[in-house]
Picture 1: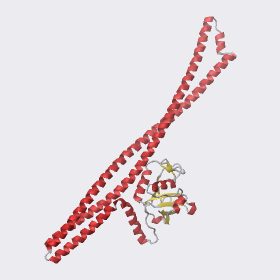
Picture 2: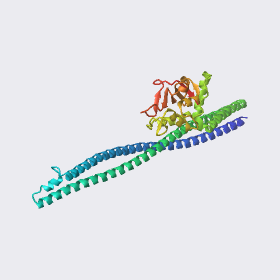
Picture 3: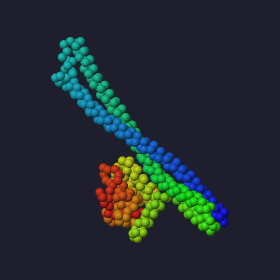
Picture 4: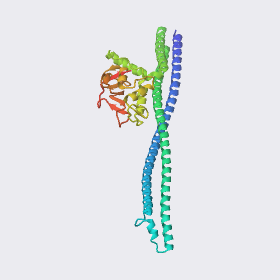
Length: 381
């Protein structure tokens, strides 16, 4: 019987080693993927920074060129007026006119000389005017080229910002998966130790009953851990959502009226929202893209990336949620200001009394505090 007990423990120990090997391998693969995503994020952030610098330079050059064009316009206008005055003076033969200047010559030679002087002045003025107009055309072309380059850079910056947001979501999902795999690994290691300890107990047992009892205990412990490890591996991609569900279930136990947790992966939602606060995205009335957001455009954009279609206004979004007190809000829930059809603002709750929103004109997507501006109620999707 003791041999049977040892055999049973050996089988469970082997199972624990197998689970441990799978968990370790999966964790290593996930860590490798996570490291790769982190490297891409760092590279993308560098490109975003470089893109912002490049755009700033282009806009600065464009402003300088506009100023140069404005100066040339003034010079051309002044030069044209001067030539017009000279032409009128010559035609009217007023005192001091170019014609009088030539007519008052004391000799033919002097008259010729004065005529050449007048012609030279007029020709120089005309040449200067022509040069200024040519310079203006060159600057106008330069300005057009700069505007085109700036628009291209803005498009590239927008694409980089989107890539950064997408990578932030990947990073969060991989971190959740890694945490789940690490938990499975820890449980497998515990099962292995339990089986090894049981083997010692079986070997030291003084009776077959004691040996069989130790073997059964080891089998139960190892089977439990193995089952937990497999479940953790199967659900690793949804770990963050499971954590949110567990939190909601815990809260529901103490507050029976609290609704179920959101089906949206809150960790991924918060990761994307956080990345948007770092991109200096301005508030734009009716905006719903990386070029600019209003409050409901921001929430619609973020949740839309995770398969949750939201209406276009704060009031309509409030109608899509289950209303709960602000005190029961969990990360990933929405916060609303106003009542009924008068709801006028919405934000994403991140926990700890903070939220992310697109505030108002002249501001960027950023964090806010409930203590600084308290919402009227919360809504769960």
